[in-house]
Image (cartoon, rainbow, N blue to C red; front, side, top):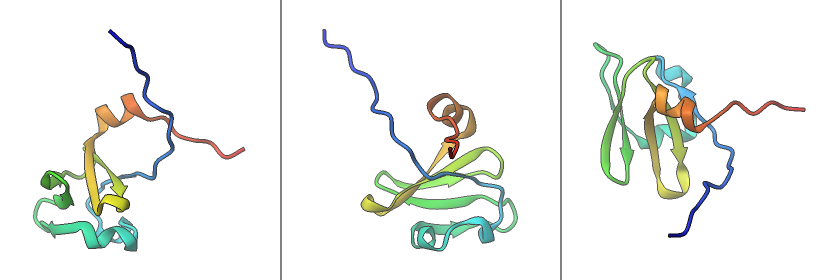
Length: 86
């Protein structure tokens, strides 16, 4: 069996807090709907619409594939670390 390692990449991401003003303009084309009562944001992904709950999901753009997908915060923090500018 061959072993593999994930390639290190840098990504843009945003912890969804329920405020549409926080979403970058270029990501808005991939927002399907926004529930003003719950703050849930539904985005377009290759697998279909996906929901992001405020404070629970990060939004990650994949603009080359025309999607913005939510990732649960606990999973996001296992996979990614903040990049510091030097």
